Length: 371
Image 1 (cartoon, rainbow, N blue to C red):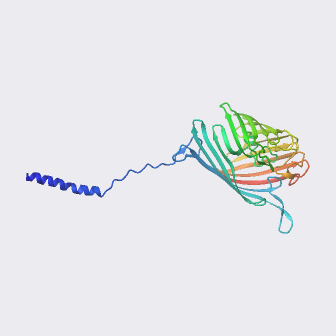
Image 2 (cartoon, one colour; image 1 turned 180 degrees about the vertical axis):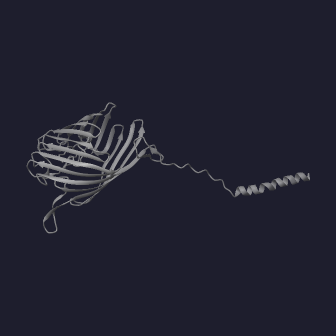
Image 3 (cartoon, rainbow, N blue to C red; image 1 turned 120 degrees about the horizontal axis):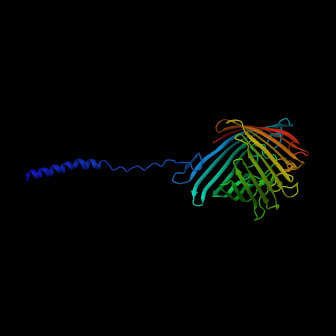
């Protein structure tokens, strides 16, 4: 009996250190698993999943600096008052930072995507406040349906004009607008588009809607390995006039591509509408690009309208019978993402005098870092 008592006492005493040790060491919870940013490769390079969602996001943009000199819409400043009481010519200088965002996610109704571009610009101040901030793009797209701020489909569906900066010395389209558009594409290279557009300021005139009837754009396109054919038409609901453009693209080989585009507008040849910014009944644009090597590309464009109008407003828009322009540049990319573009332009007007001269030259150089 005595031995049993001693055994039970020893067992009880042996639990005291264990209990004390247990009280001095609280239970530590398991750490939560860290959620790292996941790469999204569905929509191309640079996308990642927003943490906690299935939405892919990409952030990019560019920083640009350019200097212009000479005459015309892509030249410098002419007849600037100097400190001696006379006038002189000087450069036009501009810096810009553009911030871009893309998002995308897959839904049962198709891809849900967005795109924005906000421009932060600083100019030389000869035309008012040098600091400019603007939302250039801001749209939402579900499948083929796009809603928001964009460039006019009359411009984008026909793929603009050439690959030069001054491609609109003879204007070919309005630019910014709010719109609702729908684009259909099939696997055979055929696409069609219809767009309802609000309009806005274009080459010095206001084409914003003055009723509940929208401006309308429609187009058809066929794209193939050899190039493509595009036809697009626009109807100005304010003036009840319109215009149509047809474009032919050809990929001659891996280095050389060519295009020609013609436009015809209704109404008097001295009048304009939202989709006919050129003066006269018709106009034509043609040019091409040649890839010299991986760092150099040469671009050329010529344009002509049967009743000249330079880019601008007032007296600059319609004091001449014909307008002709040739623009050429070279894209030089010394390192990936950094492009230097020197460009020269020649324009000629048969008679009349726009804001500068009947004919003249301009030159510019642009430095741009894309990211």
